[in-house]
Length: 179
Image (cartoon, rainbow, N blue to C red; front, top):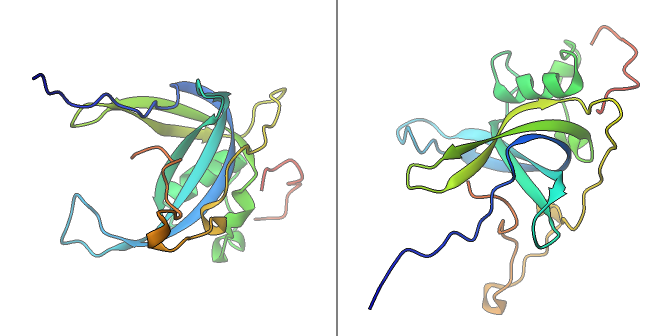
């Protein structure tokens, strides 16, 4: 009898720069750092995008990125949002930014592939930019936001899960900003 590891079923989003649309902003709550188990858990959010390119099944590729829920000047969330917007946050905007504003907003994402420690290839977002001129905005397709998924009783074998997701200012004219 020959026994082997199962073939990977997950196909990562292709590497490169892609037109994308944010299809979800998820409050993940307090999340422990798996690399520093003694560290205090931090408030975390997840943004999920679809890219224009589809899988063999016809469904669009999804890609996600988790962030510490912070707009501190060194926070990855702030850096990505400012790059996406094409301008820094104003002091007034830094008092509170509603992530719901990014849901449905178009952008360009730079996806890179990294090899996991146990093998397998993972797609990671290396950069987010405003949608390039002349690139058509895409709309989310066949995606139900996590907050809108119906949770069924466990005995029915159904429930909201993330199987669709990949493993793991001064006032200016801002009319062309995505959010």
